[in-house]
Length: 141
Image 1: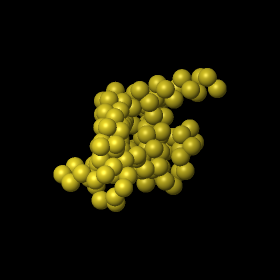
Image 2 (image 1 turned 180 degrees about the horizontal axis):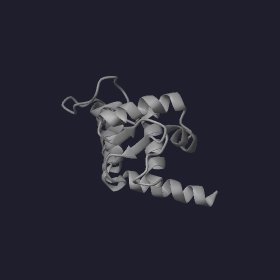
Image 3 (image 1 turned 60 degrees about the vertical axis):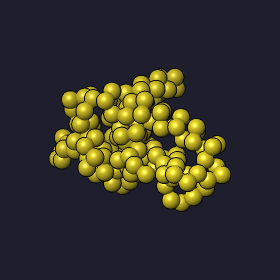
Image 4 (image 1 turned 120 degrees about the vertical axis):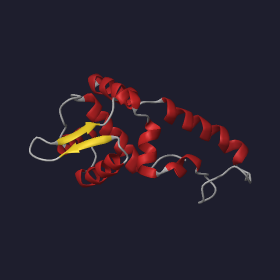
């Protein structure tokens, strides 16, 4: 139940938006360069994030991306679900179908605690946390 590379790119891109001015749109080209996300993929990701209500996209010469709400109110879980869907939280490493925990497989007693820890991390970590960590990492370079 680890999230997709696309969701990872979304987290990194939104962290860059969070590091920039909260009241000025950030251009998608600037976000792509700063987060090292391929620009064509970022354009698709922004559409999904917009539909999920996580960002506001403004077109035009001075357009770009703004967070739809404060970074402290957007969790990693919000982003992952926007890109990968809610079923990613119930992925089992042994089966293709999402696990509903009704019929436990042999892996269940080992996987469930790890899955619960990852979900707790997703729920408890905000975009602000990730942006802060990225900002500190950039200063260290």
